[in-house]
Length: 315
Image 1 (cartoon, rainbow, N blue to C red):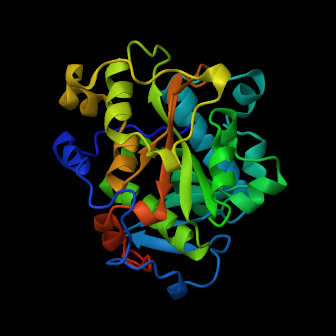
Image 2 (spheres, rainbow, N blue to C red):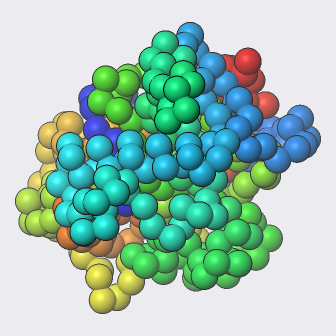
């Protein structure tokens, strides 16, 4: 489950995305993937980029992970419509077993300092992403996304590629702006390069659990961003929700784009594909779609923007 809301992407620009620079069969020849420029894996707590007082880095310890979980609780349960169980209510943290072995990307604000229990001032965590590499997932029972989509079939069909799962993304409401989103993506891009990732995937959420009410958005994604056969993944059978609910000529594209969550639009602008079928997540009050982003298919404009060596916002 992954949610970020706030109008950050214009429908006009996103419509242009559907005549993409690169699609299946294309190459990255004009933007070589220079993984040799960044050899070492991302380290715990390492700074990956800065814009003004904001810094993007990996969590340094479990205390910071707990703060990220509190941020997720504030967004998913307090602001959105997720339903908390007794433990979640008591701790006021959005937590699950995956947190223990995932990497946690953080955006912190050095202009918003808070005292910890020892009285030391520390910058506030204002944004987060949870990242799970394939080799780690394999040692702990698989990816979170596998509970909703049959991603194992895609992994098995690409034995030479390295997958990573992105999830639990959220940003504190006052920070939902271009600067924070760009820092998060700068951090992810640096992570992808350092760990030599070939494919990013994960669930993205549309608020609401009534597929008929979301027919325009789901149908738009089906007709305009559905993954090609070689990258297509289907929702698990017992949770499968049909996305093709309206014919293409019956969709108001502008309205559908306007309604889509900014995070989904952001993924599409980067060059993401959408899986086959959606899944209703009643705990979080959302309908989830699968995002698939092969690194070789990323929009060249964004690769160039963040830097082929992730240097745009490097400190």
